[in-house]
Length: 257
Image 1: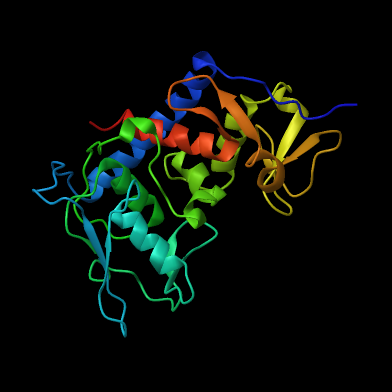
Image 2: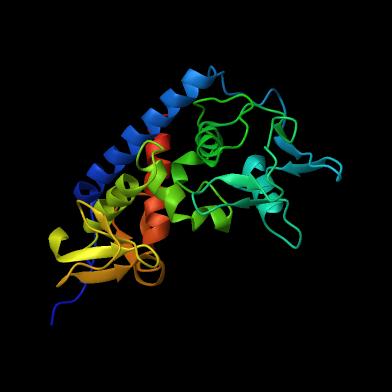
């Protein structure tokens, strides 16, 4: 009986075209940032940790510092979109928006140091205000473990946009599906990726119903949590979701310095 069959191990030759997709996407995102504002040199100015300040009346300013591998920008996102009384949310499209409908401006979200290259890309795709963007590579970036909040990590629209030059919609989901192809033994035309109710993604189109005779792989329950083994430095054994994010981080790594 036909079924989804995962590859036992992937090597460097399997990974290389996926990293190339991520590299090209990140380069396009950086070009869009540069059209908006100039990149600046990356330096900490003698400071040990960056501080991101969120000011959202009626509450006073809230300061968030870099913690371990989670940069202050992402700590602030986690605190502002989570907890018991979040002021913002990560919406279905992977953008940070205010719960009261107001626009989040520079006065509301500010970091006291230039953003590293990773934060610059992430703030841009999350549609948060950019302070001073750079193409800087932070310490330990080689480990491909840039930390992000769970509601960012699990947002499939955000992940797919990061692999498609920040353009969303059907085209981004098709790119994601093609990335997943590499992890399977199945012929790409044999199966479709389901992204929630009524969203079935093949290599050529997105349909509201599963095509007849096709295997269906559900993203949230079957694909994202499946553990894969990538025999490449700094990848190893992780869920498919984490592995795809590592590919994004590698794409950024190769575009910063």
